[in-house]
Image (cartoon, rainbow, N blue to C red; front, side):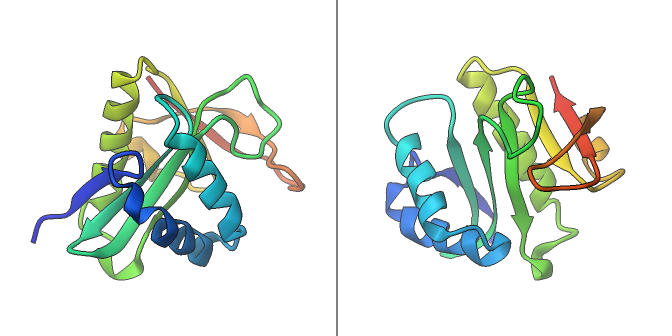
Length: 149
């Protein structure tokens, strides 16, 4: 079965399930995800939320928000909360999702995206470049900021 990538804008009936799914992966309150997803339904641009479905199962997801809780608000918008279920990794799901997000944002007139991570080497595979270090809120050590243009 082929995976299907959708936005919550296009499939608002998935909002509650997606908010619960993201909460289960990252521990941020479900209500925060739901609030951001609800605001994405009101128009184009940011925020925007994506899920990858295998049938009806959510196997991956990510969002695009203004600032992913770091000290560089000038580097915006940010891809955030990228997660692929462990049993679905190494199948091109993350790369496909990142490509979909970049293409979708280009349609919205947003050509440059940023991403804060502690990973090294992963995002480069998908056309992202290391840009600088940024400090996440409450973090002692800086993390890597990547850019995609």
